[in-house]
Length: 318
Image (tube, rainbow, N blue to C red):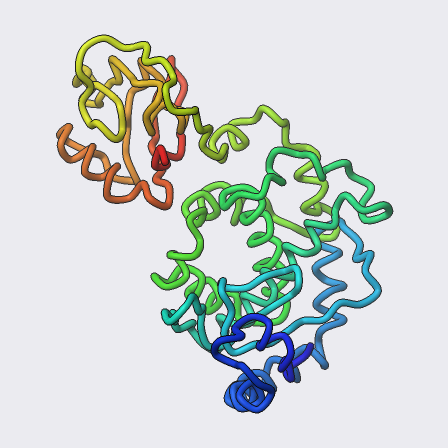
């Protein structure tokens, strides 16, 4: 774990740190917080990596890799190279302050889990053939949720997990975890990990065409100019569906534009919409408002398809 990242900080932000002296000054401002994290890592790092590998069912194949603690970073964190920003996410002149304390430990465990999962395809890493599983796709509701599950399960051995979950569920963390709704409904508390029931084993046992795989599917984009197989005007121009109220009180999709958000997110003609973002809508206006207000990061739409309950995640078309 490296605190004195002068060259790294200069390479990240050459305009802000044009020389060694300014980079050094920036590094010294994070020393107290960085030292606490480094002391924890020096004392517990080996145990953390052993526990994570045990719950993952994946062996660490790298003999050593650096973990950079920096003041700012263009993203919330990274697992290659392993980077944990302690004060903010910086893009140009805009700086988004990051929560302190336990949040740094969650970030650390999260990036370690991503790095370990990312190496699952290396020779000797695991006995399970999981690298090509659909849930390993690099998307918020698939790969990120697997990493979050592994991270929080491991963190439970080293910190107060209730306090950690409170941080993870906070408004500031929700903005960076668009897959959190799926995580708590389908992974946490459902995929319980242990040395005997590892993440790799659970993943290997999950069919590639399962409901969970379908639910977490990233949006499929169609090129502009795709044909529209609908008749008449559609309600909700961005969403692309026409509705009628069913005798059950739910709204049924009676027409759908194949170039718009609803179709590319997985909704289909005939689907009965039960709720949007956990809200049972009463009017078409409320339904569309709920979709438009929350779909930027993806909103869960629960449906009945045929006679079976199902769900999709509605994303923006573009």
